[in-house]
Length: 221
Ligand code: SF4
Image 1 (cartoon, rainbow, N blue to C red):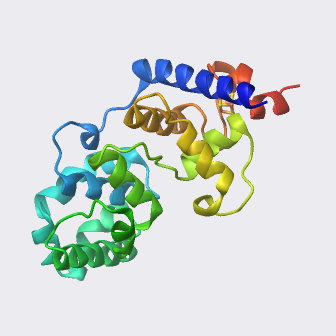
Image 2 (tube, rainbow, N blue to C red):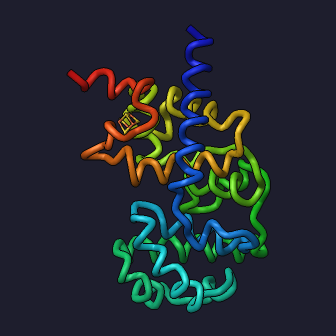
């Protein structure tokens, strides 16, 4: 059974990366040579918001607050005003402000150690993983509801309600990073979730993963 699982993982990786080469999305935060600050801000803005919405807004935010220093000095109400166009602005302003102030206390240095990273307020598992993947080049999953949906449909459902504490999803999300470029496969899954394996109407008939997909097998007549 373990071998079958490895084969299904290999198939998943191969088909997804092949799809992504032709259909992957291009976003400013996926460019090379971004600062740590720019990478982290993008991930925070992307939480619970469509990437296309942030694509147009990202530059506006960075023009107003180009560094941790400028962000740490900002008033929360000014931040909230700037964040208005993308929604959840009070909540986001609070989080971003607390994060920036905490970074100031740390001399604006992002810790390498995961335990220290987790101590930063409002960092959360997803952002901490993003820091390790994008800044420290470790094989970490950008496991959010969208990635979870693709993994669960193809491989089978989770056991616990909360993604962050589901041992099955957590280990699966790490296994699919093995032997491939971790950044690319993460982005491939997120793009695939947005364009093909969509939440309400997955495009199973045009999906290159369908012959191995559990959801597809269980739902076709
Ligand atoms: Fe998603 Fe359908 Fe493809 Fe399965 S076959 S991965 S459910 S789009």
